[in-house]
Amino acid sequence: MSEPTEESRKLKVIVADDQAAVREPLAAVLGMSDDIEVIAAAADGSEVLAAVAATAVDVVLMDLRMPVMDGIEATRRLSEEHPDTAVVVLTTFADDDSILAALSAGARGYLTKNAGRQDIVRAIRAAAAGQSVLDREVQDRLLATVRTRPPAPGQALPADLTPREREVLTLIGRGLPNRAIAQQLFISEATVKTHINNLFAKADIRDRADAVRRALAAGLA
Image (cartoon, rainbow, N blue to C red):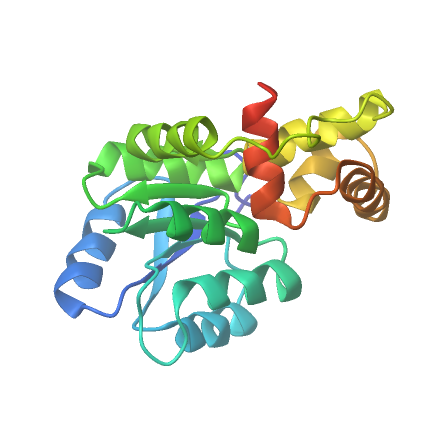
């Protein structure tokens, strides 16, 4: 029997939500897609981490507000400990703090629970391919944040940013984690971290969420 090809391999997905009435039907619906296999349904972030530690996972569909360990902390831990596993947030909340916290933690996509099945499947596929997907409501919130909270005077991007540093900032603004940035630019993840450190120092950027705001304000993302 021949081995399954890369094209035919199903994406291994975990659905994380503290409400069984949400996660179980969602897992069943996603499992109807030919290229998605839901391998676990988790009630909190600690269950997600345990499941990912036990088997390779392509994408976690992550709720934010969960007991024991919330989705932000679970996303941060996954980004650090399992960088090959992408996170797509699926939540009721689309406030500025939640969006920026999730992106800063390393989420590759952010959808609200108004999203339809096709939107969720598309976001899962994109995240597995190293791409970022934000639904329209989230994009509008980010742009509104930029308009109402522009960088302070004197915090325009400095002229001495290198072209590569601008590329890295652009990709951060699009929500890509370090590994995906490295793959897209054909450089090592260590080199990406060096560019980010230099970029943050030159532009006085506080954290990744601040970098997203600055990229949007500069029209880079």
